Image 1 (cartoon, rainbow, N blue to C red):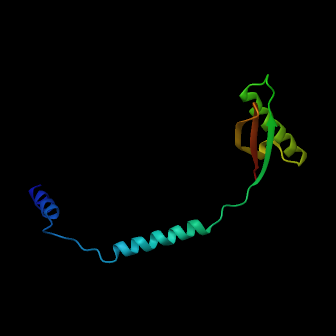
Image 2: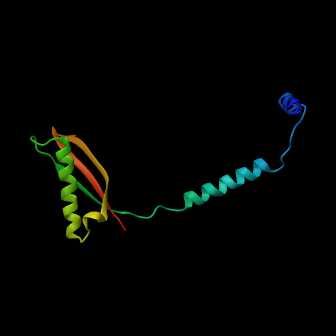
Image 3: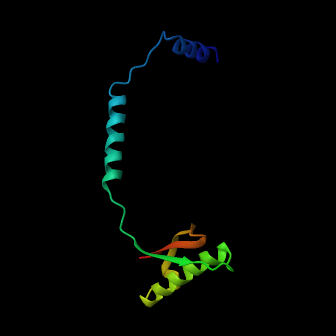
Length: 110
């Protein structure tokens, strides 16, 4: 136990140093190569259907969002995409001239 304490004290005081040649440059090289691989690969293109729905004064925000998704899904079904064949990417509400407008995007699953 005492020898471990002495060795630790020597390292901390700077009396003993350990050199690892090329460790920093090798690490930098691997990091650079990994970054290039990740950034060079483009994300696969997704097929997305964007839709907007202008809500009525009597509808809640949740209802407006749901109608937007339902109408977009109906459009996809006309194109032969089943209900399990898409996912909702975005579903937001914005206000335009005192009206709530839902903007939704549905991604078609491959």
